[in-house]
Length: 192
Image (cartoon, rainbow, N blue to C red; front, side):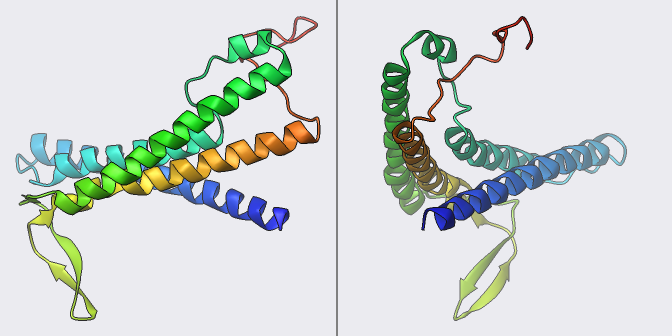
């Protein structure tokens, strides 16, 4: 059972990393295309800047879940290295729990924002599900599609926080938990 959970965790990480890579690539493509069309052909697309910004926003929200899972978010690693292992463990679990609560806030208020978001992007086309089939809609994509990343990211952040807490708890129980070490600190023996 634990091995299956680890495999799912690895799959989710790889999927999120792939999404981040794709979104970063798209962000660059949209920006370059927009610049070339604006300054070379003097005919910029109306959707160019919006897609660049939306790609950036979605990238940041997906990356948030990855940083929570890998414990790469803002942390006081130097302070953890000065504390006894059990104290550092408890503090780190507390902060992960706080991040879990942030994920819950993102889910609750994100769903509310998606449900109540009005307005449309006049410059964007979109795909919709109508009468049991996928329909291409020209122009006027609802803004709620763009902010749907907030509750999606909230779910991913909560799952990442739970996975992190469980993983650290199992390591502590097996006595293999290690304190976070600031990467700028030299390792014993003078080597980094």
